[in-house]
Length: 280
Ligand code: AMP
Image (cartoon, rainbow, N blue to C red; front, side, top):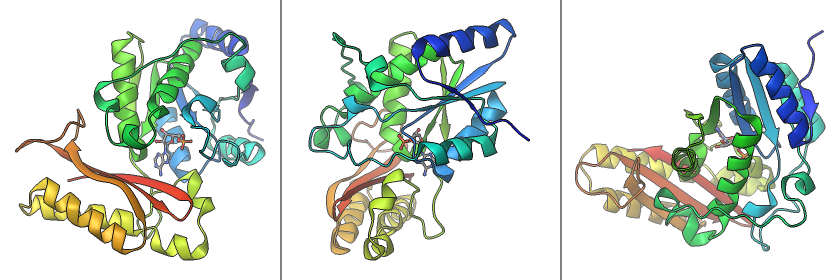
């Protein structure tokens, strides 16, 4: 019988495990998650397995990236099932720290990312990337991993985290993972389980609209015009759009002619906020 991942729940224990792995010459990969694992997360774990000798999957619903009015308390927590899924993938460690170990009394440090963190998500969730970079920097330093895998599903996050690691001289390689989608195009997300059946039927309009905009840009449309059409299509389907934007694919700055383009969207479907993005 294959062993499940070894459960590690304190920074000190993680360090001890990593020290032992390093002594044996292992290359270590980290896959940070908030749990409620789905096929998108598992694809990242498989990618990590191919890149390293030992894979650590962290499961931590990070309080510092949620605003008080957001879904921190109702965010799905499915640890037993997550551990079963990780066992199936051969993940070596599940790192599940307590909030009180990540942010003990007296914790006072903040990270304020700029550059790719400006605009898009930050216009609607102003503290989000500060919380993300803080927890991710801690996970990088605690794990000492050689490589970390981040999904393109959260494209701005991927760029922000990559920039943060470089700016803070954290010696880790950030590798992107392709977005895993349902057959109808909806990007897998732990939050999809919030959707009612009626909302679930409407949700693929986001990826459909982005795909159409990408096609239009490749056929010669101005990126901003194509993004505007995607915004209209998503709004018409009954969603409340936070943003639908065409940006420079690397810097996420507003594009100029000839730039590589990424289309990014965030919209509310009832009480659920969905995000997605595609290349143009
Ligand atoms: P989360 O647990 O939602 O914070 O996501 C943890 C990691 O999984 C992040 O790097 C996400 O970008 C990635 N991820 C989430 N959904 C998907 C998906 N559908 N396809 C690929 N990666 C994903």
